[in-house]
Length: 345
Ligand code: NCD
Ligand code: ZN
Image (cartoon, rainbow, N blue to C red):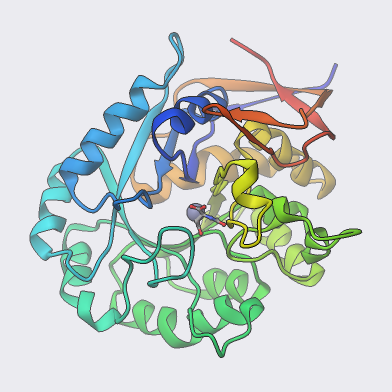
């Protein structure tokens, strides 16, 4: 039996929602990961420390007995966020970053930022206290092709941010293109990126395989094969600027299989199996621990986890659907198989 033992990993980009959905999805993450950066795109957005602390308590209440899982909270950046909000966040041990959504870019991004200049003083305050800025890196202009929105974000916004804030830790979240992989690799040390399992496993054909595949629809969209290969290359290279962030984003089946289906892929259930497959196929299993367990905490200035997990190379079936708080949900690779499973306990 082939096994792989690693420092326990963390997920540096995760959506767990709220209420009954929260209770169903948190255990999937807690089984594999010690910590996760929790996205604040609830309705209303988690835009203050008080809201983040209350949300953190609800997440902790959903962690099964005997599992040790720590949610790392983020604040939702709006044009009403003040430098004072940032100082409060910096004083709070449970808030680890601020999330920037260009207004309208994705699910629950309506309260995001329209004009970067309006949040400039807030970004300056974040730089002063070294509170990381997590970016959904896509422009929203309707005249920009949806497959080009990430690349145009780099040109129009990210280049300027990187020049203006040399001391602000910045993470370009869920990168999907060679352009982003190159920009981050060649960029300054305060710029890093998370990479999802689905962007490493799939190219855009997966959205149209024999018909329209709503469960492969996420934002930013999955791109061409050449981009997938560039992501695999940087993720498996051992470069500490790239680390694991699933962007697991559950939506009930009905919300995805609809006239106007929601963006988001539920990958949390088998997340470590997916990443391990990618690294195995790239003949880079020795680089998995850095990507999954070391680079993230090192970038955030947090300790690496003291405990370890073991993955066993053993096929496991992925169910056709799972329960999202009383409604059915469809996990990534539903009805298929994964090659690795975490050893329980
Ligand atoms: C996320 C969601 O559903 O909250 N959806 C997605 O496709 N990734 C939002 C996001 O991260 O863009
Ligand atoms: Zn996300």
